[in-house]
Image (cartoon, rainbow, N blue to C red; front, side, top):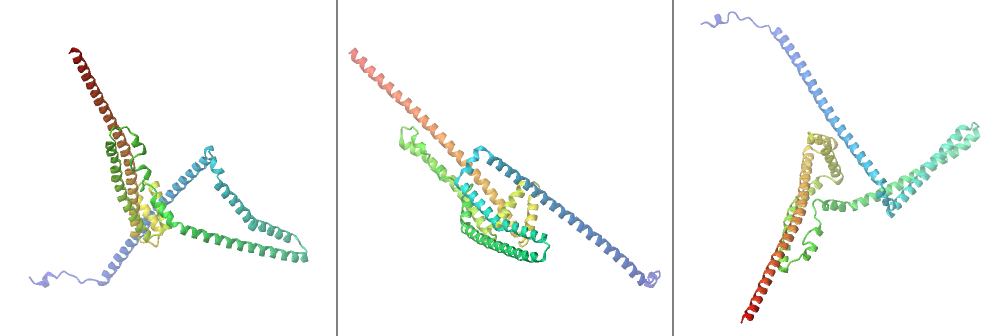
Length: 359
């Protein structure tokens, strides 16, 4: 078939019309993309607003929680059982120092301010020119004195802040060590080993009693090793965090983590990560998520350590009861055996006596 006959009905395209149609579709697509972009921005804005609302509600709950704790502490301090606190020598000395500081602050700031106010008031009330000029010098002098007092106060405060910062730096390692050594990752040495009253338990054989009491040492060794494994893992996590974060950041991070864990039930990790990302903007997300994972693991280790200490104490109590019961049974069996021996001996003597009588 001839191709000319096949294409005889095809008309030539109008390129101008094609361009106009393309422009129309391009404009429509741009409008659609703009609307989609606006909807995406609106959705993201709504999402951010909801997240911020969750943060606000969380810290509002935390503030209520802290106020409630403060009221409980105040009520406890007002109780007669705690009146001895205010009679302590250290408390009385601290209170006297605070009162002296308040009086010093009033003498440095408040008294010159009142004097300056009085001078300015008197100066404004006088209309005579000579007296006004006379008072102007006294006002300038009062302002200069007040400025000198404020400068002296700033110097003393800066010296105190430097001394305080030095003392905090000196005691930082001790604080970290105390934090590390406190429960639940530690055990009381007094609660380990053989109980003091165990040697007073009645037993006819001292060697057997020593063998039975050695089970306390074996039990302590087993639980102590479990606690040491947890402690080593906790220490490794702590050292890793201290290499990447300073002590203030770690303290802030732990407080925020505990707050969101206490106040939020659903999507806790998501909201915690969002707030920490806003707070620590100079940190990347991976560092924050790693520290969050470490906090979760530390909480698990703490729960595990608390469980081990609880089971350890219960096992020692059960072992003590079991050993005493065993010793009691041994004592009863020993008494029964002794009575049987005595009975047999008495019967034998009676038989010998009767035999002699018969003979």
